Length: 196
Length: 196
DNA sequence: ATTATCTATAGATCTATAGATAATGC
DNA sequence: ATTATCTATAGATCTATAGATAATGC
Image (cartoon, rainbow over all chains, first blue to last red; front, side, top):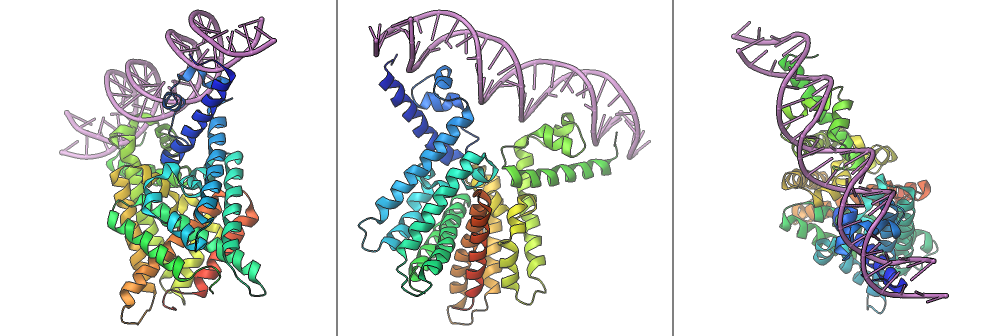
């Protein structure tokens, strides 16, 4: 048995990390308490010393998902020659499509957030705002209404990114899936945010 | 008791219609056999005389969802002054966002299709192809590479439509949700498919 | 003494089946 | 006689709890 308080903290982190991956892979409803605890190397009995309920874990895992997304977004764009193109290429990639567990929660958890508890929706909404702000900032629009126009454009860009990955994951024809991703990458980069 | 063979056919249709609505509202995993049968005015015991398993019902309900989507798409564009604008306004509307049960399955079932059985993904893929063909056809592109270009554009447009409604349903700030829908409507109509 | 985790299990829920009931349809 | 639906229930699964165990930490 692991027993120290530090062990407990590490167990907690491990449980949340695993849940954050599993809910993106299979949705918030699918992974059970026993499965998640087992993946964390623990038995299910101790779960309720860590969380008040399964819903509490799912909410915490959702929040962690978006914290990870924020970091990933910054890592991808920071220091890139063309941050906007780097962001598009990262988001609309076969790699991202094929690994939802480590990918963006806005696409993986979109449907679940729509059906879910307020705490999940609040975390989701905050991440959408961060994406919009980041995308708008990447657009170097210098026109008078630049800020407002950039924000409008960011909403459209985000919708396109999210929709492309959602559909690319759902179709069971790999060629069609690749085609959608390729078309969206090309279109978004051909008309970058500040380019009008 | 209702007993005739016609009664059974009607019961079957009612069960599938209700399931097709409920899976779009809450996902394919949520509605139970008992709940769906009860909503159809029946008890759960008779379910397995209609379907081999719950999964069979969900697959049939998915297929019905997309059959309904195909009809809705045609109704919206047929006879419209500007079929493309009519389609965008219909898809990216508050009405569509607020009524997933009668709306498009490509957005409502996207995540479930990604996790789901092959039969669901096949129905989903067929509907994506129909949307792409319809959108490409609405684009009156007369340039040499018109067909190919129109198809590429359709993939981008579909991604934007789907992503906008997914995100608009998930955020819990009504103003942000309305803003995303409004921005996407304006952007897609400002740059219609054949317009370059 | 406290506590992090374990084993065992209660209680609820869900899919699926068995057998009864009351009509239809030959 | 057949069958569409009903009542009742078996069996599996899942969340949550109770009590035991073996360390930590004062």
